[in-house]
Length: 609
Image (cartoon, rainbow, N blue to C red; front, side, top):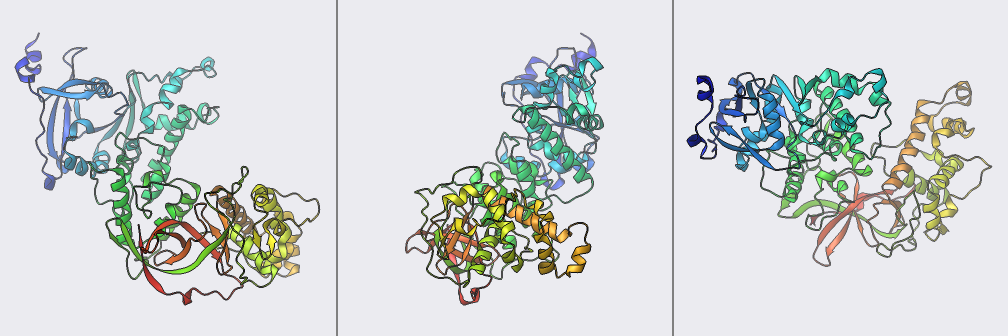
């Protein structure tokens, strides 16, 4: 053994004790960096030194992005001359990295994982750590083969297990990858036998071997393709400095994994420009339910935004207050619409709190002011366009209210159609009275798309008629399955004249449909699709108003207009005569052609549990 090797290798006495961390000084924005030295021999364990430095005075370093892995079997390295336990996958990464000695940031080593306070504060600096690094080194593991990236002509059509080792790699499904990729200035992907650059990966993802490849959409390979495509999009958006919102990130990253479930939020905070509305700083050692509630409370107290009540409807957890969404799992079609709406509202200029009296949270109780609008008396079955939706005994339906605030049949028809096609529209609607005279077009669309649901509700009475009678009119043999096809209908001429105020002469000269006309039909399509996909119900209230509510709504539930939410919310008494309420979901009522006014209702406080 040479003298230099004798200086590098610690004596046995030096490695008798395990490594212990010294605390960081947070006021100096300190981080730890791992110094890797050249291997003493081909099979020697990595020998590392840990240095503490202020991040603004740090030497040039690289940040390691890797997967902790499901296999948590441990081995050890020498850290500052003492034993330090690491996973097998991290050991393989360090053995490869030590061929290029230098400073590296590695989360499992540079953060004291046993110190929950330090862990939270350091995680809060992850964005800075990865964006400051001269390069982010991605480690895919020792078993990855990337020969398929550079195939010969004869190999292009041959099955290659290397594809699965790459696209099916667990690394791509890590939630932390999103931030680590997005903020990096330079990325290199490392595996045991070589490396590829970020630009090479981009080129490959756009090549026919990926774009035109027939991949099983249920396979891990396909998940990997989707994850990589999402990473590319997010990184390009971050480079362009496009604003990124936490709720959208949570929805888009819902399938990604984390060893600690809290990281499904914490791993995205650095990217979200509105993250501090939900979480001040990461805190470990709490339950996911505690995090759910803290996020909801923070948003309510800072913005007065009660739209979160619309995210709760299909996610049941008896241990959570009904006003708290399960943020990790908000991904259904209706929640997607609401997330888009909330983001759009947050981008409006000079938008302050939405209410005069902000909601108050005490323990598990949310206190907020609102008006009682109406009570549900009649309900259809939940709509489901993929099969029968016969009534459930758990959620009863009853006959209609005796009240009829609409007067004539045309107005009732208008209310039914507007509820089904536009009741879920969050951004306004172009529907006007012309729909009354275009009964054929909408009737065809309703019958083809929602025929099972309509047939199941033949006993649901509206204005003295069963629901099917309102959509059963026959107008020739024309079969329409999509309202975009209606743009060629002769009825469009009358629609243009009535809704847009165009003269017959102008309409006759039009060679293509108006953008407004196409937008109208797109709204109809979107509205009906959402109504069926979200499994909504048509309802009639105590006052005879027609509208839509969530599938969980039931007879006797109350519709309330809360301050801070333009949407009606369906609530239910938690305990009779205890004046406590639980959130059921959103609702909407058609008040056109009626004398109904919400001004007649008085504001009062509701305690929601």
